[in-house]
Every structure is written in C-alpha cells, then in structure tokens.
Amino acid sequence: MITGTIKHQVDRIWDAFWSGGISNPIEVIEQLTYLLFIKRLDDLQTLKEKKANRIGKPVDSPIYPPAQRHLRWSVFKDMGDASAMYETVADEVFPFIRNLGGAGDDSTYARHMKDARFTIPNAGLLAKVVDMVNDIPMDDRDTKGDLYEYMLGKIATAGQNGQFRTPRHIIKLMVDMMAPTPSDAICDPACGTAGFLVAAAEYLQDHHAQAIHKDAKSTRRFNEETFFGFDFDSTMLRIGSMNMLLHGVENPRIENRDSLSEGHSGVSEEFSLILANPPFAGSLDDESVASDLQAIVKTRKTELLFVALFLRLMKNGGRAAVIVPDGVLFGSSKAHKALRQMLVEEHKLDGIVSMPSGVFKPYAGVSTAILLFTKTSSGGTDGVWFYDMQADGFSLDDKRNVLPDGHDNNNLPDVLARWAERNGSEKQRARIDQSFVVPKADIAANGYDLSINRYKEVVHAAVEYESPQKILADLKVLEKEILAGVEELEGMLSA
Image 1: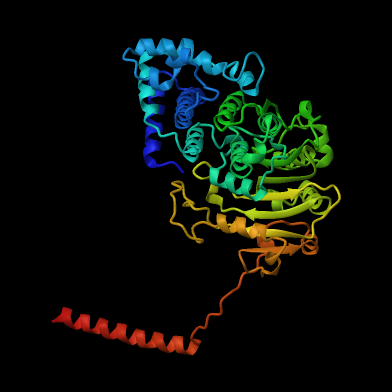
Image 2 (image 1 turned 90 degrees about the horizontal axis):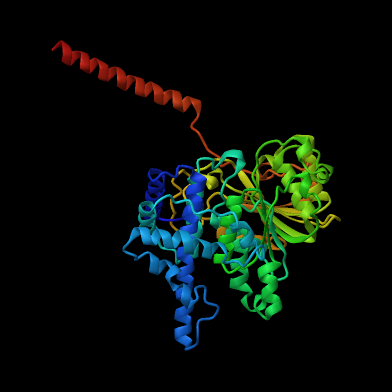
C-alpha cells in the first residue's frame, strides 16, 4: 500500500484540479494519469540512457529522438515560463504520447488514445500540478500500481455498480497461484485498468524472461497474442493501455466490449487463463444478456452470468482464478445451485479461498472468495481444496495499515504454499485446520454448497464450571460481607 505521504501528495493534486476548475473525478484521474505517464516515459528513457552508457553503445529504441528532447518531463518541467510550458505540453507533448503507439489504428494503445483530450484549462494549474507530480516517487512498480488504485478509489462512484478495485497483493496471489506460462492466452473480461494483465505480464517477465524474448516470434507473441482485456469504459481502457505499455507490453488486445451483451456472444473457447474480478451489479434485463450465457445458466444475476462467461471464453484445459461474492457459493436459487453443480460435475473445481470482508475496504465491506477451476467439459473434480484466509497483511478496517510480518497477520504466503500441496499433504489435513480438502461426494450430499463454513469443523474447548452449590455458597459469603460493610457505613454516619 502507498504511504500516507504519497496519499497526501495525491490529495493535494486532486484539490488543485478541483480548485482549478476540473470537478469531474473521472476527468481528474484521466488528466493526472496522462501526466504520470509522461513522467514515467522520461524515467524509462533515462534508464535506457544509463544502460547505453554502461555498455558503451547507442540507446536502444529511444522513446524520445534527439529532435524531441524538449518533450521530456525533465526538460519542460524546468521551464521558467508557465505559458511556454503549457504550449509545449498541449501542442507537442500530448500529441506525442497520443501517437506513441503508432499511426492510425495500428495498436491497441493508438486506438484508445485517439479520443484522448488534454483538458487542463490554463498554464497556472498545469505548472502547479507538474510541480506536485514531480515529487511523487514512481520508481517502484508496486507504488505505481497502488497509486493508480488510490486514485481510482477517490472517484465518487467507486463501489457503485459493484465495481471494487482489486488490491494488488490479492491480484499477485491469484497470478502466483495460476503460474502463467509463455504459451497462455490470458484474458480479463472486465479489465478496468488492466491490473490482472499487468501482474501476469510481470510474472512472465520475472519467471520466463528468456522464453518470451527468445526470438522475434516469441517477443511478438508476448506483445500481441498473450494479453486480452475487455471493458466498456473508454477512460479505463485508455488507462489500462498506458499501464500495459509502461509495463513492457506494447500491443495487448484491450477492447471496448460489454462482455455479457448479445453483441459479443460469438467469442468462445479462445483463452487458456482467465483472471478477473468483474463488477457485480445485481440483475440485468433479459434482452441485454447474451443468449448463449442464458443457455449455460438461466439467470439475470451478473455474478452468475460472469461465471458462465468465463466457462464460455475458456478452452478445454483452461484455468481460472476469479473473485466472486460469497453468495455465489451458497445462494439457494435454482440458478445458483445449477451453476455450482456444473462446476463440480462437468468441470474441475480446484479450490476456494474464502477472504475476510475487510479486503475491499474502505470502498466496501463485501465478503468475497477466490474461485479456482479448470474447464474440462468432462468432469474431473475429486475433491475441492478450501482455505479460510483470515488476514492479508493489512488491517481489515478502513485504514488498511500494513501489519508486521507473521502468519497471524498475513496468510497469503501460506495460501500459496498449501495450494501447491492441494493434491498431496493437504488431503491429510483435518477440517479443523485452516485449509483442507473436501471429497466431491460430501459436496454433492450438501446440495453443492461451497461455503467453507458448511465443511469447517469447530473444536469447542471443554470448560469446567463450579457446581451450583459452590456458586450459591460464595454468593452467601459475598452477601454477608456487603451487609457488614453497609452496617459499618451506617455506624459511621450516625456517629
């Protein structure tokens, strides 16, 4: 999580935008993101130059050619004349970043940036905000990601329509559990700012760097055929495209698409890995929902429709790690039960991680779980691995402060370690433990209820109490002492 100092800096920038005449929170975050992006581009160019100097070679694929050096953040931020800086940014820097991904519609980035607008109204506001943004450290990629998360959390509508930003440490856990490979086609059908796709890209860069950059073909596959994201919010698509570009993915397939709609019902069996935390907005109208999703599960509830969507999008053998509200696990409607039975009987339900309700605070106190499954279309569930996560490394109140290291404060390392043993030693653990495996027959016998509380056993410690006779005797002694005290007080008062 970002520090209080950085939060204060962002709050000051936010206030500057508002007092400068930009009051739409979506517009504020969009303009601020552009500036952070411009600053980060300059940082990346500096890293390229340092590497070139170290090895004694020219800069490899410079972001800024020599003739455009004046467009770099480190140059224009030091212009003494605010009006000159404003003209440079509005007339040259902004068109430069808008066309960075190529001409026309050559790339995802170019398509989404085509409609981007620079709307900071005057030189004074730009100069003030540039000074403030310059003080924000952007070197650490976790800080950068958490900074996005904090800014998004400041949008007044955050938490409405079931949209909750997924904390980066939860995203990382899910990606680590799925362990993406260079051959995966990874999709987030409700990608927002592309947090899951960014984390998957980082995992591949950290664990498979040689394979994804083995030759021109593998590099092109990583950049163009590995990451797929859908969303219908054009602002989020622009931010997501910038986020991916900053993390070294040049042309992900990030598309403007309402994933649940009839208009996009043709996409099926294309992806080998689904990572998602889709919005859960209640119920949709029947006519607006794709008919092939209704064929999988007859419902209007978005949380069930999204699970049906994941199954439709995945290839056989594809894996999924997705966040669902707890109601999906134990809801009593016909559609709820049918979907759970389908996951258990027709596919392979691998595991469920029950998360504490404070994970999404301060935006929401909703109880959620991570659902982990493999599409097989032929069954395969022998047992389901359950984990009762009780701590994620942060306080579970609205402040979400970092807690000291230790299992009681952070179960995430244990989740990952025990997930790896789900087909081995975890099967021997008792249901009083924090994690255990439940045979499929038990789940079927319980009507396919997937709530961990249905299976977790609670050990009640034996407590010995004194006999009623002893308690009554003690009360009589106390009563005598009280009466003696009262008589003593009466004597003192009468004296």
